[in-house]
Length: 270
Length: 256
Image 1 (tube, chains in turn blue, green):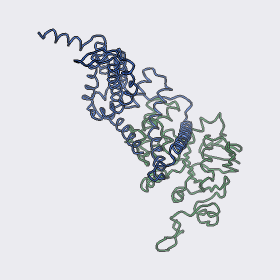
Image 2 (image 1 turned 90 degrees about the vertical axis):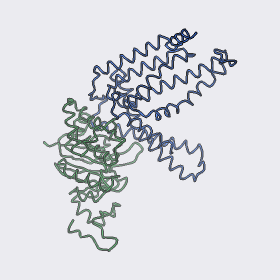
Image 3 (image 1 turned 90 degrees about the horizontal axis):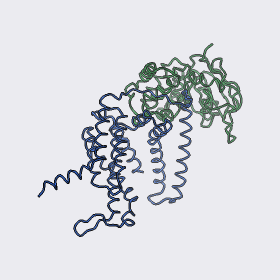
Image 4 (image 1 turned 60 degrees about the vertical axis):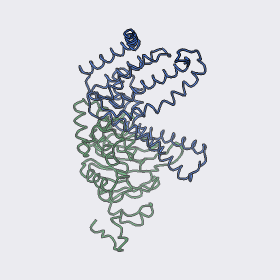
């Protein structure tokens, strides 16, 4: 129950960060969404054994966090939270892919280990970029930007409703879970059986709430179409932001910068 | 013709599971009246309110708003005329920010951007929530949510204001604030509430529902002085009309 409340306040904090004032925050949401999408595409398009060429991409989260005055530790913690899931997904890579790719002294590193580490780095970069996007833009603005970039309204609306009611439902889950805990007297209660009924109740309440919301929408003249009230402008700054970062990502994707730098240094060295 | 008149004739509502929520209800509320619909839990208050703007369809009987009979064809016009504030503001505030939520109704009415902004600003200022414009609803307190929920309805310029339990869940200060806000509205007002002190304060007329039937319809003060009627309908007098439990002094009903 505590963890539910903690997760909700954590989510609220991420949203509140978007209300800060910085040059990155003041950019049009569409510019940030576009740059993040290009960044993610560039990062995930590398070969699964690629390692060195991913590292220059860390420049993007580092620069944005610094410019937007975001708390770096908060983002590191958030990204670290998803690492176990990524590790789970790549757990069997070292088992099935045993061909040795690199040697560090007498130690041979198999392709499985390389692909696992590559997967981890890519997840850190892409999930980090998504968190930074929400932290500098706000979930609502991200959804609206997606819609203005051509995403069907039905998807963006689902996301907006999910975001709006995740707090209400988390509150309800917290209260129900607290009631269960208090009557379990510190034991397991009725175990998994009580959780099944608890989840069922929550589902029914969600259903009921959805009906109430729909009624409230109908009462205010809703006839199946959402009318957006738009205010922001893309502007020259947004254009420069998209152009600058996109060019950098394309260069980093096409040219092997770490390889070139490495060759340069090893060429200088006697 | 006035849109401010609400007339309910022989209304009956049976839920799909067979529960009879409203057996036979008739009343007429005229322009500018402030009327409370009270009753014990399960008396049919909320079901009745939901018929006033077509959220529920009557099994039999009819609802007239002004000269217009409530039907599928007249729903859009009636929903603009009858503004409904729900008991739980979390059901009413579904948009990402307060501004967008208040703008939702006027945008559905097809108003232009500037007109919408003007209406939103005016409605929020009227309920003293102008400063909450950019906030997401989940960051508002209970009292703030309630005021914003009222603003969402006011922005549509309704002629009739229907409110389900307006003061439930509010602290005494927020309750008092909301009551003084409601007192200033010139609309035809219909409330359901268990807060009988608020009813006594705001509504000169009261309708008592009991098991889906109108048991009394008349001046609030007279109804609250009728102990037998209140007991039969599982109700009690408002606290201000009860004696002091400490000094055992009975309330001075003449002052009320």
